[in-house]
Length: 507
Image 1 (cartoon, helix red, strand yellow):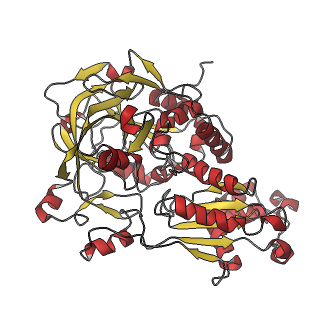
Image 2 (image 1 turned 180 degrees about the horizontal axis):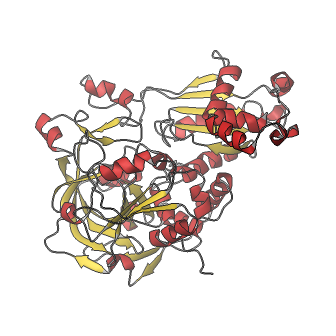
Image 3 (image 1 turned 45 degrees about the vertical axis):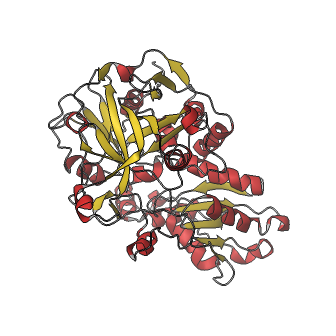
């Protein structure tokens, strides 16, 4: 039996196909609206590989790789998400540095003349309200002196309004922002934009690391290497003094011109106003708005020879929530463990609740009176270390942290609003993609403002735990087949909501 290879996108797709988790579509599909529409309709289902793209016979496209919570653990050989988070914590503590190679699949074809990115790559238009066709699935690779001697990956949306140049959106407070706007302002920063990378690299790019744990200079590729069990291979770029990911499907080589800005869309330029014209759906669940951004200038396109695979994650999606959640959750868990070792037994970002940037739930097991109160320090630390975190919740071990309904039940029945709600300080740095934080900008202020996050201590007092015993029905003592046919059991279970199914299991 061939050994599973998850160090490339192709190897991962081969594995998912064998597992019955890959849907291949062989009919022609258009990158304008159709790819996005199919992915959304089949969300939380299989990974989808589109083999025939209208106008781009040389390319393929994939999406929904991370659309299920149980898929990343399966890819990396773990039985559940908790094991994956623990592996991510191990990777943070013991990175496996990348390996430089001379030859790479990502450089089988090299284009340095007559570059036309929009004409060569099957760039998606997600909705009819989009301001442009946007690349959202690239991993921007920053390394060497530009990142304090370390390695950095991130997702950054791109709009190629020109054949070989595009706007590049950089998240506020990110490592790339530190490089472009602070540490190397006024310089040309060489980077590669890698598309169709190994899944561990995608997870790193989407992680949104907490910077007290992963500062500038951290070896983010080393985290990916440790998780996949093999160093991530990198190769010298052909036209820039930097590196590319060797196993990428596509690479755009170039540099960020920190002296030149460009409007993100035609409409935004015509209006001459930032944060007003639509651009594409963002992870917040709202329609993103266009800005005046730094310019990326492309000096080469390289790719695999055999029909390279484009990657189209949707920002506002299960995939957008889960592509980086395991490493982000690992960061929250690590901070909690440093405050009070062993108090937190698991963590979870609830998908769909403002995504990975919006919430974190801590599962707490108080062992004695001495643990009481530390859950509040952990909640406050989460708010302080995660820029723009909207909601943090601490719950007891009897709550299912994977069920938004159960977490909401705990908040409703266990929170004293005068004592157990912690409101984070407003006015600081937040997430500009949240409409609430653009209000002051819309009113004429130069900077947006974070209005403050919410934290809920939904744990019960240790010495009064007996008073919060949950009722439990004898679901484990009955065999439905005595009274109900298997056909009716299946029909009834199909009608049940997720929370009803949870209660049916727990009693």
